[in-house]
Length: 308
Image 1 (cartoon, rainbow, N blue to C red):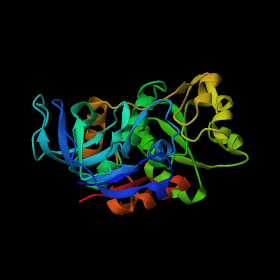
Image 2: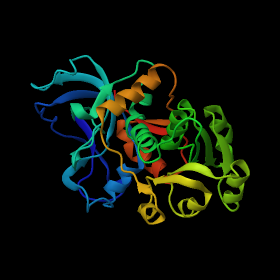
Image 3: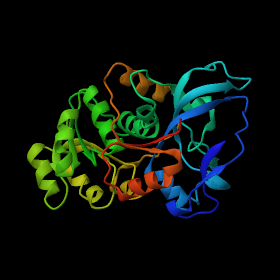
Image 4: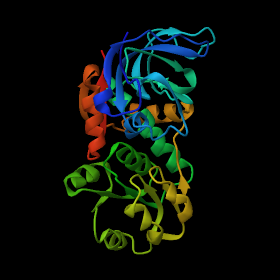
């Protein structure tokens, strides 16, 4: 099969469009014919070696954790899916090697849910990792519920735009930081936008003088540092981008595959309560360009890779 690979840690220039063996199918997995994958910042960070202390890399590595496609074959222990089913998944294992930037991927059933008919394959591929990250942060450490006010740093990005929609669906008031070119987009999702940069804390206080009930940080750095002072008494803080959040009394969130959570997201999308913004679509052989765009860090929504 055709796939994108890298043979050692490096940069997008080191990616190859190559012929590799089709994946073997374990008893609790399904073989998915990939229709689309999605790029996440973690993909190029893994390739750069930043996660080497946590995840073994078995080279050559096929990058990618997000997928949407059609079940081609099921393992002998699988009862949840059948050939022909359209699925999406966050196909993460405890090592990196057998990713989704390929024509086929063997996906454990614990990583999959049925693809919402309301989404294209490119949209569905952009939902699992980002959607699960937002969902697990909001329902876990942040416990965001009706009547709360939530501040989301980088609200127009892949995770942020989904977090806004999930929170609004729960009756949460959302204030979202973004560049001014994305303010109308945030308003369309139901958030109250504020600009980045000097004076951010004052702009947030003007909207929430008593403080916010929760902060979801997606960028780290200065945005995270000022977050504790914006919280109301008893407020909750979580970050997916900066481990320093723990020292500030908050929680660091690392997303995990969860079929039930992914199914909940699929149900939201199916009834029109959750949309996935796709910023750009690249063919598989141009995956390096997709990675470079992700590295720029200014994309609104998701970057997809169309496989076939």
